[in-house]
Image 1 (cartoon, protein in one colour):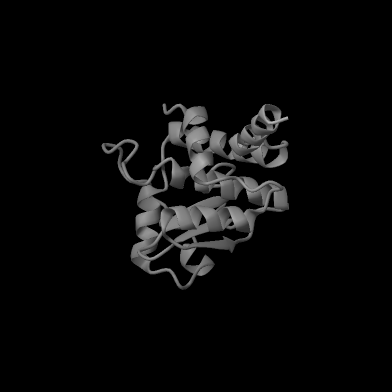
Image 2 (cartoon, protein in one colour):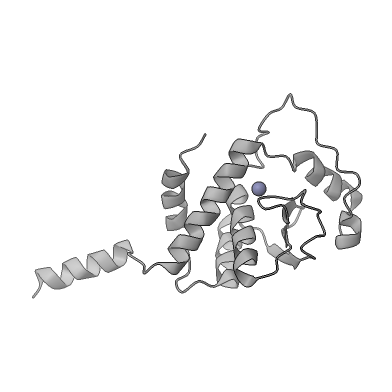
Length: 173
Ligand SMILES: [Zn+2]
């Protein structure tokens, strides 16, 4: 399994976590970093019938031109956590290599994705369903990433720049 704490530190430098927390701002930064727009798509919490990511109600769909994050949550906090989980999959590169190439693709033909998002092509949906199963390790990694984002977003920030300016002041007193 990847050292998520180490990767998180690196990634938080590349894509700073807004403090105070701001979901739209964070998503904008992730989108800019990846060079691809991200579309947030709220869905009914039960829409994926627990077959989605994390707690079962999130889904990342990588389309040709953009990324779609679907999230079904009762509360804003839960929504933020699902979104951070899907961002974890993105930034940890979980789409670039199959977790277990020998494992047959998960069948999810009964998922009502076309109804959830009529603008998605059937091909896009199929590729999601093929890739939807990231494997347990990657699910844990994405969940850990989301926890770390949420902690970083709520704790007072200790940025290198602030440390530097403190040092600077001390030296020139
Ligand atoms: Zn996941």
